[in-house]
Every structure is written in C-alpha cells, then in structure tokens.
Length: 249
Image (cartoon, rainbow, N blue to C red):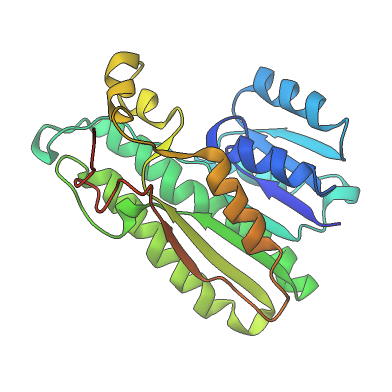
C-alpha cells in the first residue's frame, strides 16, 4: 500500500486517477479548490480506502505551505506525488492575450507544480524513496497557433521534469512525465470560459483520449519495479498527429 498525493483531484485526469488508484487500496491525499467536490469524492472513495482531502489552491504559496506542512502523521510519508493541477485560459494571439489569463496559467501550471513539489521533495529525500509524476502535455513539445503562453507553461513543465530527474538522481526518487494530446475533459470548457458549444466542437468528429486512458497509464507507471522509471510518455488519440493535425470525419 502506497500513500499518493494528487493535485487537481476533483475533475478530469486527477479524478480518474484517484478512482483508479483507490481500487488498488492506496492511501489517497486528494487536493483541490472546490470543497463540495472534494467532500463528494472523499465520501465515495473512503468506502474503498483511506482518504484525506485537502482544500487549497496550488498557486497560493502560503496556502500550499500551511496545508502540506501540516498533513496528519498517518498520511505524512508520501510515496507518490502526482502534479496534475493546471489550467488553460483563452485562445488568443500573443499580442491580444489577457494578462490575467497569462498569470493564471503561469501561476497554476508552473508555480503551483513547484510550490507543491518543494514541500514534498524533502520528505521523499529523507525517506530515500519516492516518485513524482508530472502531467505535462503535447503542448510542451510543440507550439501551435494561439497556444503561446499555455504552450510556454507546458514547455516549462517538461524542463522542470528533466531538472528534477537530474537533481534527484542520487536520492532514490523517480521522476516521470506523462504528456497527453487531446483528452476529453473540462479542459476546453475552462479554456473557453464556459462556452460549452465551442468546447464541444474541439472533440467532434474523432475519438479523443479519455481521462481513464491517462489514469491507466499513471497506474502502469507507478507499478513498475523499483529499478524501472518510465521517464517520459507522449500519448495521443489515434486521430491526432500533431497539435493542429487531427483527422476528423
């Protein structure tokens, strides 16, 4: 049994991973901003395994430190950190982009990952074991039209993952990065600020990846033997060749 901390656990990939890993009887620390969703998910999964829910915003440094430095003793030995929380806001050219959108993406996708990791890594180093899984994106490998700052944040996740793997190499800690292409979640609805019709169009005409597909990969990565580290995975729906080349019928 392992203790697994998941950020962004109230929806999408984070929620799918929580449900998948609960079935393996892992202790779960579920983190998110929405208390009602955390309560709902915790109540459901507590019937299967031990669950601790923590409400905070990964982009708020003081919140992250306060909450994660006061985890109850029975959950404090964290074996696996899944940095899943993140966001995309807007789809504008860089010269027309919203500064608020830029701040939200940089704060959540980059700073949030760093804030959480900075608290958890020393605990793993003390244990001389651990596994950090960063959820990146195809957008961290290429840049597409109007993807500018979102792509920049995911390129940063790719660089941070590589840096972690180098700096933590002597500590017994694994670092993995999972990079999905198009996954059908609330991602597009958030990006288009609640314009559900526009969001639905993103997934029309082909079969996108599902959150459960990525949860399956997370479980596989976690369950490799101790000497095996799946450092980097890029996974796309069959219909997708690049960020902008998608075969739609």
